[in-house]
Amino acid sequence: MLGKQRKQWKSMYKGLVLGMFLTSCMILLYCLSAPQDQLILQEVPVPYSCAHRPVHPRGLQVSNASQDGAGQASTCIPKVDVMFLKTHKTGSSTILNILFRFGEKHRLKFAFPDSRNDFFYPLPFQRLHVKDYRPGMCFNIMCNHMRFSKDEVGKVLPADTTYVTILRDPAELFESSFHYFGHIIPFTWKISGEDKLAEFLQDPWRYFDPKGYNAFYLKNLLFFDFGYDNMMDPDDSRVEKSIQAIEERFQLVMLMEHFEESLILLKEALCWEIDDLLFFKLNARKGSMVSRLNSQLRAQVLEWNKIDWKLYQHFNITFWKKVDAYGRQRIARDVEELKRRNEEMANICIEGGQAVEANKIQETAMQPWQPVGEKSILGYNMKKNISRKHRKLCQKMLTPELQYLTDLGVNLWITRLWGHVRDLINW
Image (cartoon, rainbow, N blue to C red; front, side):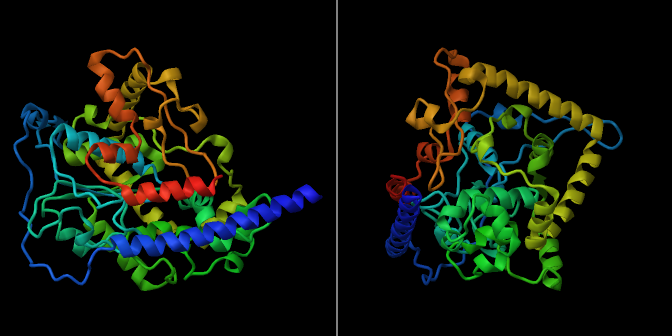
């Protein structure tokens, strides 16, 4: 009994320390790094296209053959101006790695954040958040976390940019978000019992404060990422208008549950080659940390995240329309080819052929970012005896997001500082 009380007191003490650290660090970071939004910028139009002749022309000029409606071969020009809205807990880190490799290979210009790995999320995106931004500059790829703003993004990227994003079943997304971000959402700390998710869903409003710190992570997170009010009444007509606006802006909305099919559709939309899509799953949680939702819990989650559910249902329909347009048999063949190539690369690159827990990752450079309070994110060990032909590709495919951003020249001092605070909290 005494031991249990000590554990509770220690937990409360750590919670208080965490709260003080969060408050102090957020104030400090805001003062040191918040962009000067009041600065009035000269309006200089972005060029229609920021495509350029690459150093290795064959890499981008080789046509990607496809079949048109008449069954005749047609060709297209690979696209290099891409905006990927990186949504939370949707497998988007894996897609980021694909974009990083493509952009680096073809020497494209990224619109990166300044001093951190996101565009000052959860603030709505502003072009001043872009590192070294000047009006009229050319950027090819933007892909880091942001709270989307159509107008501001449009002032950074060229008009021929292809906009893509990815969604996830809101029930599974909420489960993942609840566990990943729970330690940085203060009002969830008072939830008792072992199954905090089930307890929360019994009476969400008992624990949820719409204006609370980081509250957006626990209600309609997808809708929030798109820049809309996640607390809106689900039956408000503005919800449907917002979904239509998303469809008009984004040429492709992928689904995490059909990841390989999504990548094939991405290949089609961008006229890329299958070699550009090779991937290893990044930022995955170990299975023991995943709560299995029964039918009752799933229904409660979807009711709580009703706007996200509407959003997902709408783009589930548009997704399968695109699959039908591409051809079911054709996409099945391409998915099998992609899986085969990925398995081949895993055998070449990964020690043991699969992801391992954080404490088993041998190199610091391969350690993924971990949430506060636990080490639940899996990573990889790269084989030592990889041939020169594959070593560089293996290294790039296995590099976690923060390390890759550093390799691409982004100074992540704010993110690193927060990492030190997180490690201190996890004493």
